[in-house]
Image (cartoon, rainbow, N blue to C red; front, top):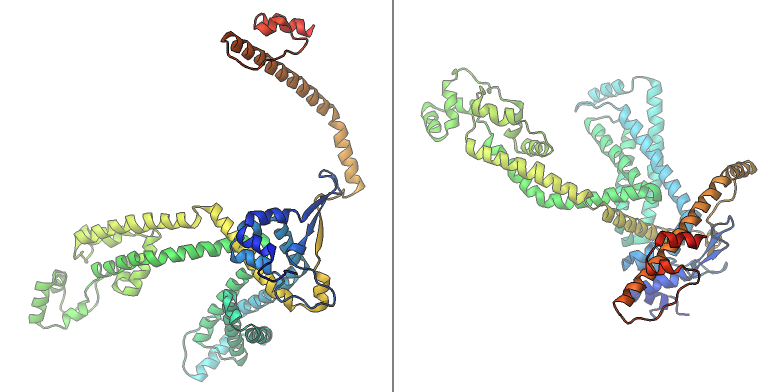
Length: 521
């Protein structure tokens, strides 16, 4: 009666008393049979989580409302409760895995088709005229058989993407703003759109430089999307969620640490920058003298031949610092361990290199600071943030995986047909916890092994019984001794009685061995 109302007691337990709600959920789990027997079963009653519906009743609009409430309130202890786990497992077994298997198969076929198309097209240089495009196309399609295979694969990819885009447009109009709350929808829609364009260009024979670059992007998105599709499967999905969590954590940290990274990259760009000899030659004699007085790095140009218009031989490690973009890339590689300090610092400072450091002290100080800050401190800090507390990472990944499964199943179940819904939903579920014997031969083999081990088992039990008797005797002996000490110290305690058959010498603590022998006799 109070279902779907603010006065519902179960919803109140979830909101205000989650511990009490866990005790209530325990009452909806029953065990049948002995635990060690083959007929032991556990019966789960799902009526507390979802109200049963009759065959003529339409499906509920929000069948997993209580599970979604647990997710919204972050009731992790309730989400991992055996009843909730069995509830999600039952829905996944009934219809969730089949829908996800079809979806994964579709994206696997799409990924294979896109990969075959991209790999079969060799990268070609940019061309402008149509006649050269035709000749490049002839170089790619070396035989009619290859042209036929590429055409068939492109047609299949085009048909699949058209069907997928039609479905996504229908979901967009039906769900409206709810469609944009799922991040996977952005990736899938972008993948389908780019794959449609790429396959259409392939069928049209429009092979250009941009066509090959577009194929690389589409292929990467197809493989990455296939990785995200594996997140629905519980056994491997936990690792995908952990990967995404660690990726998000590292990305947040890099936003802050990138300021230090850019600072070093720009500093190295200025410190290792080499003046152009061509610009120096174009100057007049008066301007050259002024430049030499202001910038000592230009003095070396005066000793060079007047007809020399080529740049001096500069080490490859220093050439990357001549441009800001390459300086950022080089600094990133240095952060990962590619220092090359000999060609970068040592040779320009004391070697035979024609290039000299303009500011040797500042350069050395910044280089040493870079080595300690980025490769050592920041990299170890990122590793610690990513995998330092792996238990919490795994626990949060489990909760996130359950949350995604709850929302996905809640969105999928109302879309099922009424007939399928009546057959798939079951308010009770019996699970056998111990599998019966596989065959009679296996039973006979187990019986033979048990018969051969009976003698050893009896021997172990006999030794164990003797050990228990010895321990019991020592406990009684220590009790009597403690009572004698208490009596000697005149401490008021409760009276105690002695068991019959205990030898008096043992009670007084004297002649223990003789007393023990007499007791045994």
